[in-house]
Each structure stands twice: as C-alpha cells, then as structure tokens.
Image 1 (spheres, rainbow, N blue to C red):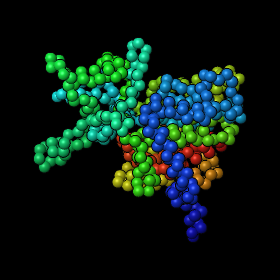
Image 2 (tube, rainbow, N blue to C red):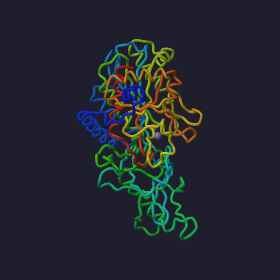
Image 3 (cartoon, rainbow, N blue to C red):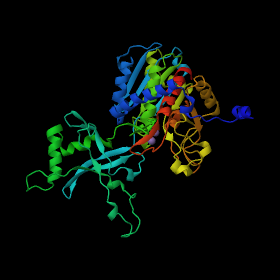
Image 4 (cartoon, rainbow, N blue to C red):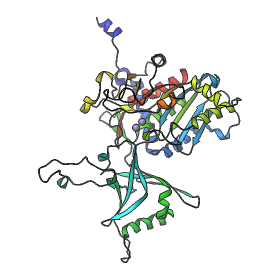
Length: 470
Ligand code: MN
Ligand code: MN
C-alpha cells in the first residue's frame, strides 16, 4: 500500500526536507545577495539602476550601443528609467519564439501629493496619496524613508534618499493613543484600524525658524532646509516623483534564519530571481528575455507598465538588429510562438487566517516555486489561465532538476473570497503562452513582508531551467 500511495498521491514537498546540505547552503548564500539588492533598491527607478549595474558586470550592453546581434549577444533597453528589458539572443531565430520572464518592480508605498507640505499646531507634514493596495492602519508609527527625484524648471534634477543610513533622520505617520481612540468613551472598543487616506501624513519637522513676525514658521524651516541643501523651492515639489517607503532593511527572520523580512518582496523577489536566472542560463537555444516592469500595483496602466507598447518596440529592435525588417507583423509572430512566465508573488497560507484559503488549492511557505494556473477573482475574471498543455510542459522542464521544488495552485484564496491579478493577462492578450509562477509570501503588501529563502532559491532554479529549456 505504501508503494501505491507514493505512486498515485500528489506529493507536496517542503524544500528543506528535500534538499541536501549543499543545496541548503546555496539557498542561504543566494539569499545574502538578494538582501543586498533589496537594501540598495527600494523604488522602481532604483531597481532599474541597480539591475543595470549587475547586468553590465555580466556582460550586458545598452541596445543603443549595438549595431547587430548574433547568438549569445546580451543587451538591455531602458524605458523612462522605470522599466528594464534584457535579452540574451538564442541560436534559434526569433520568429520561433522567445522564453520570457516578466516581473514588476513597483511596490505599494506612499506617494507625495503635488502640494505636500503644510503646518498644523507647529508641526510640519507632507501629505501623501497611497500607491497600490495597502491596509492603511499598517503605515502609521513605523519608520519611513524618502526616496525620489525632483525636477527643476532649468532642466536639472535632484535625487533624494533620506532615512536609509543609520544616522539619517526618518519620518513617521502618527496614530492616536489607545486611551483616546475608543468608539464611545471609557470601556468601549478601541477603533484603531479605521485610518483614512487623508490621515496618512508624514511628520517632517517641529522646529520654527526664528523670525516671529512670519506665520507657518515650521513649514518655512523645512523649505529653507530644502533650499539650502538641494536648491528646491515649494513650487518645485509639484514636479517631483517622491515616495515614502519603510526604512527598515532586509533581515533574516526566525531562529533558523530560514526566512527574510523586507519591504517590497512583492515583486523584487521574482525580479531578482529572474535576473540572476538570466545571467546564469548560459546554455541557450531560444532567445531569453527578462522584463522588469512598473505600474503593476495600480493595474498596469501607463507608459512604463505591462500594457505599454515598449515590448513591441523592444522585440522589433531585436529583429532589426538580427537582420529582419522588425515590422509589427513579425513582432506579432514572435509573440505567437513565445512562452512566458509572469513571475509574481502570491499569498502563502497563514495559520492565523486559514479560513480565507481552500487549503487543498493553496500555496505554502517553504514549498517551492508557487505556480498558479489562474489568478483573478469571482468566476475567473481578470486573469488569463495557463493551459493544461503548457503546465505539463513546465512540469517536465522542472523535473529535470531534482532541486526545483514547486507547488501548483489555482486562484488567490477561496472562490469568491477576493483575489488579485497579475501581468500575465497583458502578455496572454498578445498571444503569448503564459503562466503565473512566483513566490508565496506571508504579510503580502504589508510594510514588511515575509519570504522563505527556500522559495526564493527554488524560483531562481526554476526560472533558469525555463530560460534554457522552454
Ligand atoms: Mn506583485
Ligand atoms: Mn502586489
């Protein structure tokens, strides 16, 4: 009977139990480099910059500097500093399709309003508008850092990062003390979680400048500081892309250090795993493309999003540099023969909140790459669905390396519980064969999210195999 069980029942495998000591060691050292990447790149622009740096050390060259491509050529293209497209040319011609992995590099955060600065009760604040799906009550009382760029009328730009170095100041959103935050006086329930969008204001200063004749002296202190340090006036703040993100660094989590706590695993964990996979996928038949895209968290609208035609332009450029015309017709034919992974995070079962999952069809922390046949919500809306045939092909690819551990689920949470989409559908709409496969997280979309080092390493191994063999 034991044999029959082994032969017929689906085996879900925890990576740590499957791997030998050497593989576990590799997973741990892979995680060390990932943490450095997380700490050096907290916004989509910073991810683009940092990724280019690593890509160049791996021999990738800006496509603008290239006159022609041949098998093995490694190039990258940047779209507006916010998305990055990388390719290693295959031996097989482009018209036979490419192997593409796409992840997003924007994360939920607090963007500054166009007129952010005000003073109230001798405290200066920056007003924000949250970006992406957040639970607002999670953002007050944590240390926040400012990241972004301010553009001046004279064409100059000014990059700002404050709150990342240990001796930098940080910023914070306030919350009401529990003593006063009750529904109806003493003894009643604490309200707490009811934080409004307009309450997400960052405390930035509390010291007035000396001249007592002027009003709003704390606000003026801030403006004077910004002018002295960066040459910025109040009106310049309206032509800026400024965001507040958690200032906490990526750290090991747990006695066993098997997990990582960090801001923005969603989706830099898949971005990093797919980048490293591309660099290391050195045997190649098909052209391999790794895409780091922006604007996923707000529905993939905009010129740096997955819906942007920059992908068509990039494929057209690859065709032209390979001696083809690069017409839209040729681009569409490349899409139609291509295979893609939408590499994005999903929810791991949280033992404290099991009831939102169908436990027979859910992903678990430490059980390897999380493949999802479909995402979306309520009656399979807002998703593309991977075909059974494509999933079987993936299983066969992944089974060639015994260290690739994966789990397959369908949908985020129980039917009609909620759900969420990824960029897979925008690629599938281009007639590319797509599947969702990423890393399952705890605390997804919280200021600090939790990922397993095992799942990160599984994703890397699986993506590498996909690049080589799909
Ligand atoms: Mn995501
Ligand atoms: Mn997300």
